[in-house]
Length: 202
Image 1 (cartoon, rainbow, N blue to C red):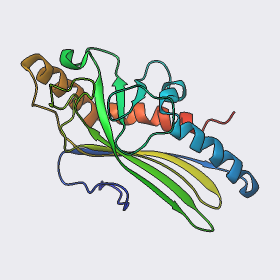
Image 2 (image 1 turned 120 degrees about the vertical axis):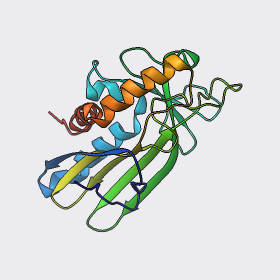
Image 3 (image 1 turned 90 degrees about the vertical axis):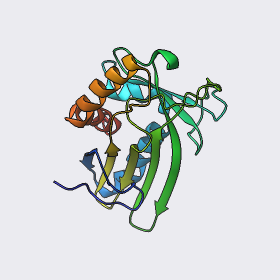
């Protein structure tokens, strides 16, 4: 199976990938109000765990200087990810990504918003520039929401996923195990919990 191609999503060149999507059919007159709720959830990064479940990772938004913030994400911000289990000691057990792109599109019949994140340094550790994530710097995750005339969609597209070997020995072992698990489908299952949760309006 080949990865889906979107202009907002980095091209797949190497390593693992996944296309994780959830859709909900809606009456046409309800789509604007449902999509408004979806946008609020999408931009509330600090609340993502409430949609994916406590067994999944927790997320915290930080600005460029490494300060926690309660606002909509911006390009250049960082997201701290707390995955259940051991993390990198140098990053205090967390994985970090940087928001490298935000894209907005709208016409008469559709609308989409995407946010691309890449493994990054820990912005709170100015002395250490190494990637604080189990994937290497070439990987990306693009979070996307969209509406059409008859449905709304939430998705996560992972691209170029390879383990981060640029770390201390024990961290390399952890990165390898976590990355392989993600590439074998565990990450897709977890992201599906998030995208399904985004679309749970009951």
